[in-house]
Length: 248
Image (cartoon, rainbow, N blue to C red; front, side):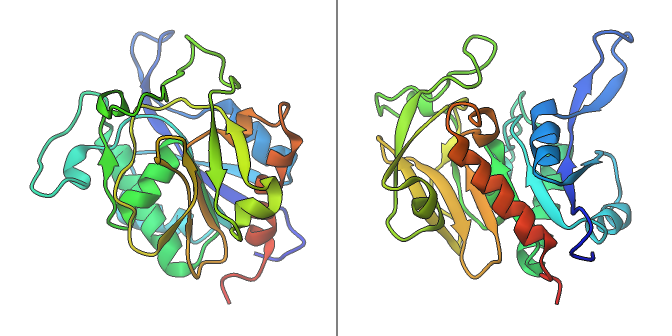
């Protein structure tokens, strides 16, 4: 895309069921992703489920960046060797769409940003593994301050940031974050580097080495813009990368 145009950012949707129209199947998305990307100058493009590979590839070739949001649990069979298990909270169709798009983005240097489930998708796409349930992890730190029981911008714990990484240039040594998950990154995937960890050692931010812009966060920076305006730099830098000539 030409750099003077507003970049188009693809956002995969998730499966849902209408509460209004008698259980009609829907594809949904968190409105805060759309509003945050619009505010920094993007055109959000929703990517529906149920597409074949050719159609999905056609959308991928037309977008300038990929955003991976939060949501359902990735099926264990996709990251546990020998497992065939699918959780009740898994969405296999979404897993396929997001893992396919993520691998294309990593292979072709497309700018990418993932939050919550998004960092987990990035890790699994690179061969990493996940903790199924951190509540059984024995760390003593609560990670599952999940809406609607808690506000989405609730500050829940601190993360330590690695010196010299991208995040350190914005936030310094430490950052206070929200936390709305009970799964998390276990073994880090090939080619990924840990940028931040929680107090119990859980990887909370990853970046893909030798990639123009591929970042994943276990927290939700889009919900913290009012708490800490520095979070806006993440989205602005993502858009700057999407505007660049990364295809060349």
